Image (tube, rainbow, N blue to C red; front, top):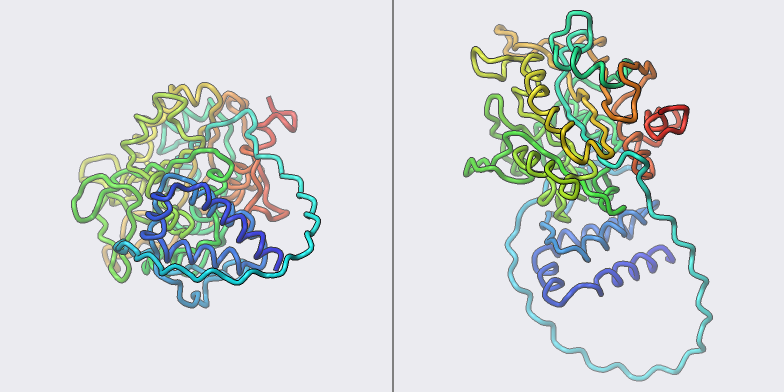
Length: 441
């Protein structure tokens, strides 16, 4: 009961900071979403603090959450920790003004109660602080194999011969699954693969995680750090114009153009915590915004997640005829993008570039079956490259890392707590060397 009372008081305190106009807009446009998140926070059996703080930050922010439909029973095969499974996708709803309630009769005066001594206030936890790295850039590609990227005869010469000598190669970095979503979801939330995510979630509405499942983006926002996701070729499916936070509509198949944007490349659209409270709509943006944001330190997010389209990610058969394809297309994308990041004021000041692989490129489709060949187990070893002034150029780190490690390391860099499977005792972090805590530079 204490937890519920405390949470209710914190929510009211956050709401009291709103102007009347903003509060009315919030109530009118997002009653369902906000009520769902309050209920999720108040009924959570553990660690409701971050969710309550997230709601408070949203209430106090100058953003309007998007309403979402109520969540039905979780999918039995979800397999998420704590019994919470993906919940249905958000659905836009109109925001009709709410009528004012009739005034309540004044209650009879109650007998004066004896004043209680206030309980001593709990000491506030120190605010998270980033170490010497304050800007992280993650580029997620499709892997055509470790040797294709870093072998003696690589198919990605820019990555292997130009970038590799400047950074630290995580030679033991491996994926959790060949598909895109299990790895990218794990890398931003610590949630394990599910049967649906291993199939890249053909039924989108069954894959959206409930509001109490928070992400790295939520953590960063709560700690007053900024984040941005930059998705190449992300456009409004109806108008064809660049648009923010694009995801499939419920009960409708995703219309994916060859070589274009696909929701499976964008893990942020699978979390109600980001969809319902407006963060996805404001910070999940078309790739064209990146170059403008890189011009100044002040406009560069502390955490940038960059995902090219299906062609430039390195997926075979997704590029126009005669153009570089597969690993060659991904390498050409890096050769254009990376110099702009390395020349940016934020990177030069305190940046880290992470070139990683979030899925396996299974190769061209089999003409007989129309399906890609299954990925071999060794294909999950993909490697990852770290480039920064705080790494030893040309070095190699052979520790076994995975997407949980990527999340844990990023959290460590910003002084955040580990979420989900990233908090596991066996999950390794490469952050200590970058922070100079284990003999690193």
